[in-house]
Image (cartoon, rainbow, N blue to C red; front, side, top):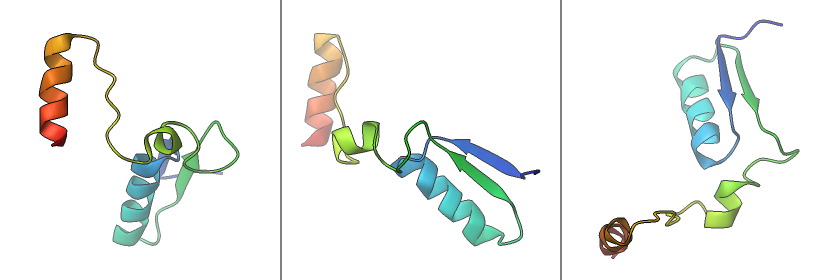
Length: 69
């Protein structure tokens, strides 16, 4: 089968992109692929679809934490 768009990752970002693309053009064929058997089970579920602070440098952590506030 042929697809117009293939999206890797069915978390909050991938699912949102798929939804918006389909909303813009219902005739387009979109394939949403994820390594898990359910959507939003990897980083999305671990971060509750919110910000996840993964920065290693102290400066980046301070900047990120202040932007969250």
